[in-house]
Length: 122
Image (cartoon, rainbow, N blue to C red):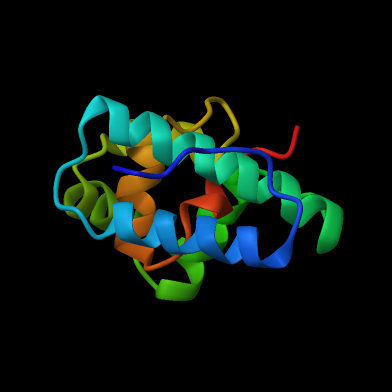
């Protein structure tokens, strides 16, 4: 990988980071280093988005609940499809726990969204 993460200050840098995130997300299995890089890139992109595209604060759990409702699936179906324990899905939905980088990646792939949606804002 020839990408060196750094703070994002321009729209072109932001777009480059999003392309890198998409590239990593296309991989079947991520190494620990790739998972860490994905999390770091998500944090950098989220920081840029907060500054340039402010949005109402929504927790990762609220985001997950919304995506489950919109897709019309159950927590059990999400658990089976992602390999994440159903209780973990429930705990994330209730705000009782955060989302690990690995689970963020699995959920993003399942829902076909950016993992940035599952990064807490604070």
